[in-house]
Image 1: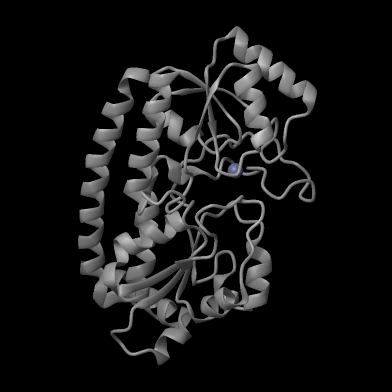
Image 2: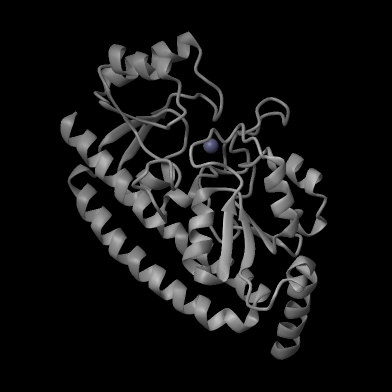
Length: 309
Ligand SMILES: [Zn+2]
């Protein structure tokens, strides 16, 4: 029974990747990810057996990703599309329509939805009308890769898909995963130790990019400047937030690279808060060369900002 199921999966995997047939047997698997973070995890697991790329650049507002025709051509030749899922990539529907590859559609045999094994938070966020804003966390907060513990279910989903696409490489992918998880465990210990003195500190975020990260490392988000994800505060909402920050002495704002400079200036000048910009994605900072390094960079920056408050 198990063997039959494996054979069926194998057939599915091969059927899912007609483009891979024409390539030589030892050619790397072409994998397209929607983000540099997922690309980094694909590379950690696939090693030399994968040739991965990201549709979104390292520094981007998730509202607006411009995908180039060359990327669509490469997606058509890819074996797998690995995505964040939920409503994180509102721009992907257009890309998939242009590529015209139904195997990458939701639930299709070439699609890897990395959110599937992850326990989401903020699933109670009220849903806006679909046309109101493109990125509203309407199904739960989509920035789940920023809790390093979530790399485990994400890696499991990627490993599964890679091994299905190339069954003879399964042992190699498993070995790569073990090595990656050793680095992750060592990292978690390092990051927890570095942030331990600031457990319970209240911070304000601009976009709700950081709740997974802050929950893992014991910081408390007192408020988000965006009243609804993707919607900037009105002047009245901003004034109320600033009053609240002064009252409860919240002195640190976590911003994203694409946060409004005007808003950040208001928060720092009127609320007397320090602003630290963290990197949501691999490659946004030259030192954030891979998934593990992304956390090293962010933890270092956060510790410096917390100490200087
Ligand atoms: Zn978001």
